[in-house]
Image (cartoon, rainbow, N blue to C red; front, side, top):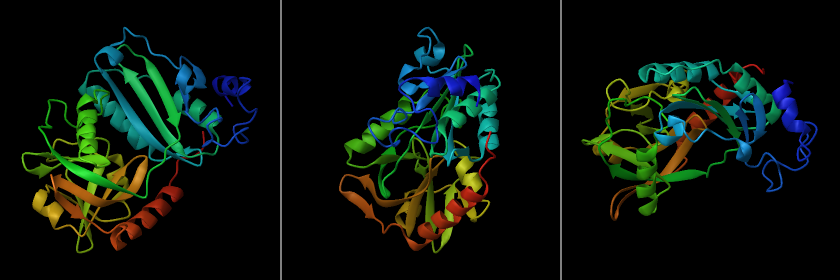
Length: 295
């Protein structure tokens, strides 16, 4: 274990071994309940990590980040996520330092647990890592939010998430769990994930080559084991779908049980439908079989 990881577990509030915490991770008393962070070469409880207030990553969101699934203490598709981090940084003319110590130190301190790993790099070169527990409900409801979505840096994963948070709040205000963004009549993405539609057993997802959306690492990974057609869907495609599910790095396949289109116009869906259930099982097995090696 590296000095950074060792330092965390030598804290008197921590268990001496990451594999045997004093309290379960889900417990309010667990030191890992709120997650851990990497800052300036040290692993610390997430609440103790800081970022300089004068950093434009804080003041203006001038930063890039990635979120990576951690299962049993191992990442999944880390190389693909880091490659996308580099592409995002290149689009902003921003330099990404070596992040290997961040990943290694956090995973060693975390132990054999599930979670979500985030890596952030700002314009000033501030590098931070965050590793937290994650949990999701059995299924989601979505609200279609019609709003302009294209920007000069569409598809770049920046820390400028004010618009994403706005559409999420709009969806919650319509009594849904999350938003499904509609722009110029075309269905795009969730503020923090991708949508998949099922028609007659076929799975499709919006095409990042033709739409102003993030090129999802998870959809690409899913397409290695399930045929995913890349399309430019509209509301008619949504209404005719037999099943709908969402994917992201930390929620690999999550069924959608309802979509609020407008006011009282709501699409009810059975979930998990047979295709969603099969895709979830297949993709879970693929993830387990292709986890990255331990650091």
